[in-house]
Image 1 (cartoon, rainbow, N blue to C red):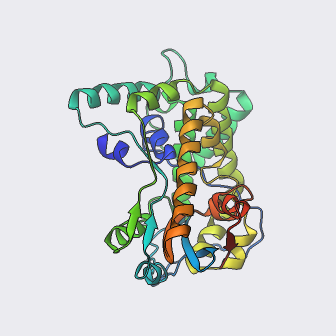
Image 2 (tube, rainbow, N blue to C red):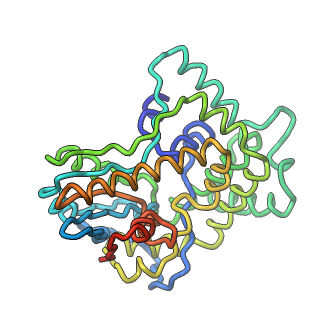
Length: 328
């Protein structure tokens, strides 16, 4: 529990405490790119080129992370390494810390989190939603998770849908569990650059209490959004993953990234406490980016792809503040 909570984004905290081992939702794509029937990864793929933000002679280079990615992806880090070798500063990705090392407190938190993922007694998943929505869910579950677990009907809707989502990704040759982000973090730590940690600290109990305030309507919105993603966007996910792996910038620009966690987490994060955490994280990252652009000739950071290309993303906010933003 403490290892999950110690280094987690808002989305990871939701997954750890409310959705346990579930995966976040991928954004939908609107651009056209070559359809790929299968993803076959051979050798080392370059990943995306770096985005560039400048202020006079100073430059902030940004690596765009994407999930899901092809299974077995071997990422070539040389693009990032060339920048890190000369960077004076690096900015970590935004994350939340809700760490506790007290074993008694950890046990209490674990019990509280376990209660959150179960429906009230004498209620089932079918009771929580319209029959049409439940029928969509059972059809997808039969396709991707034909062996139904005994506790399936006792799960909260968001968790049940996200289990199916994870199985659908696996079937499509995709994974949320790549080591690209971890490799980037290690290389940033090992560089000789000054490191800025974009961190917001909160209490685990606060996270659990905020999760308890998620409304049934918000959870059903998450549930429906997850189903829609499986039904309509698996091919789009493969196209985005392939474009990201080979560094196809033109294709990456054509795609739409409405939210790196999708509408599901957007609904779950509507609780005031989560909105405040998200806003504080983004504000801190922008502050560190401006500091780097005022201080170092070369600096480096990492952000989700959505924040690089969306009209309201963090790079668009930097552009609105007068910085020059250049895609690869």
